[in-house]
Length: 302
Image (cartoon, rainbow, N blue to C red; front, side, top):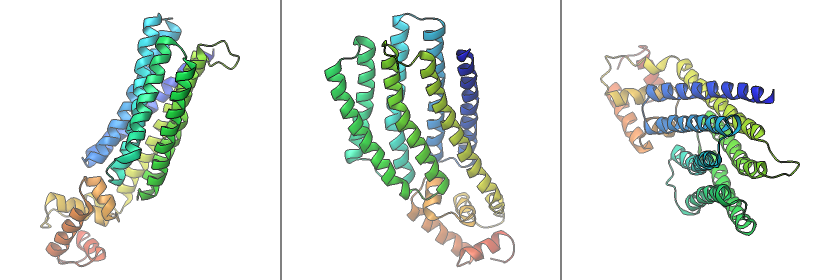
């Protein structure tokens, strides 16, 4: 009975995840830049991991696959989740436009390597207490550095919806990954608090459920704000003597975006945005955003 309930939750999570992938794709296609593509790639990567979790559960729990199947799917699982420890901070650094280096970079590499190594060693040889405990301590230290770096970076994210989304995704991932490792280890023991395959599958499913829901809320808010911003996204008249890039800049300025936000959306530097804005103001003979809005709405001549 419980397996059927968990399977229903899994199907629901799959639907939500691929809905988030579709919204992410639409969001990227509206303005094709590296930042939006990276978020689309990240959501798609989560969708692949979710499908892998379903395949692993089906083979191990329902088909009672042999040791080769358990090891193969387990290694793929640990490799996929280890890369999240690189993906997540890399995405945050891309959002704030910061070059990723130093302690935070090597902490991410260390956490990825140790997480994957711990999982692989356990699958092949079992829990080696002295080595595994030492590696676990190193992993916790590296994970702490990653978490502190992300928390310190969050105030640098200008858009409120993006800031909240990064916080939620970070907390979910940091809490989830250790549970995956501990759950798999305890599943093979006879301890009274050992996690069954079904219960671990529920943890996996709930992680993807909340990640997908967070993504859906983020994309709906982002695209709604574009539409509700006075309809300015497609309102720059064609007769205005602007290039395609200058038209994008003018639309973004009219929406009330900062230079940093425009730079992030278009994949260019803030200085480049300032140069484009200066050219737009010069071509349209305006000196402020208010005057620019007047020209876009046809309320004044240029």
